[in-house]
Length: 193
Image (cartoon, rainbow, N blue to C red):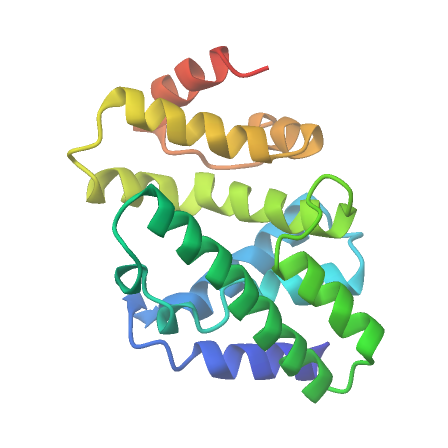
């Protein structure tokens, strides 16, 4: 696993974008690993590999390469899932893992069979928790034109993707949620089953 992490981190260290002075996707991978440590330290090794590689080389597939509409957004997301899954599989094989392990990592990173595959769902849970704790506040700042209704929808959609265990974790006090967005979060969750 150390070898796989080193390969994933080395490729993400090439990210030209910075977050707090660190290559953006390198920091993201570390945040994913840290969240998994807090949320599910008993996770399978394939999940540890998948969360670290979830955004591997994301900057190579920019949103601007697709039409700037809803259809284009979904094409971009689907393309990203395939791109990340294929690259993650290659890196874990290069680290010495067998084909079965690589296939499981690719399935989880590719967000395949979310509700049927517990490993895919766990990667989705961790990504949602990381978004809520680390990225939602900055995302809100970067989107001043988003209406409250739009934000309620984003929060509700994130919440719906999460398992009941991840939802409980998010509300348990184990996370640092953006204080100024808590009223909006509570309002969004009031309508989510």
